[in-house]
Image (cartoon, rainbow, N blue to C red):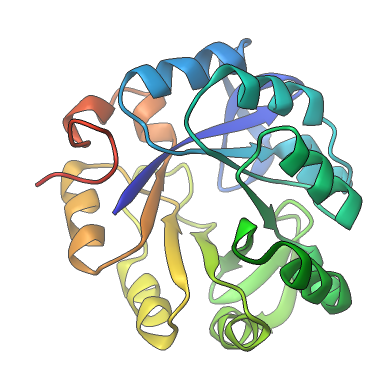
Length: 242
């Protein structure tokens, strides 16, 4: 299972939100590039980056900063937040990003998603952010009537190979992931599922690995010191070690 340290960028700074609430922001660093380099040094094999400004506005506000991160580290990065056009995807991929994550547009613009999959294949992932089993959009500020499980099945038929599944109510709460929902999603699809939201302890990581998740994103627990990333990775930083 791949472990992804998370770097959430808001106003050019590395922050964490609680339950996706932009009014509950905690700044951890004013230098996201240095944070990324530090995660690589600690053994990360892949970094997960979210442009929170982009997620809220629909524009890739921090793309230049993200391109700088891609140039600085030698490990792959995946990026989401405000990806609404083929041009944005092309720009990210041309500037060193390995995988681009489509969120809101995967629900609101199916033609765009299909075009992205046809052009870029496995370099595209879809972020499913759910609250009480229903998909949320626009930086988690709006809740749709789409059931997360239904969307997963639709995405699989479209050709999506990877999803990032976040339970918003668990995110930033340090109370553990929604294992039941993650397991249901993982068992219902052949898509690679990256678990996000609430990963707090080594036991959480172990349990996700046992449930054969493709990956797990860890955020607040790393920044608050609840988890020591170096204890979780193998010598080349590729997967969880029990």
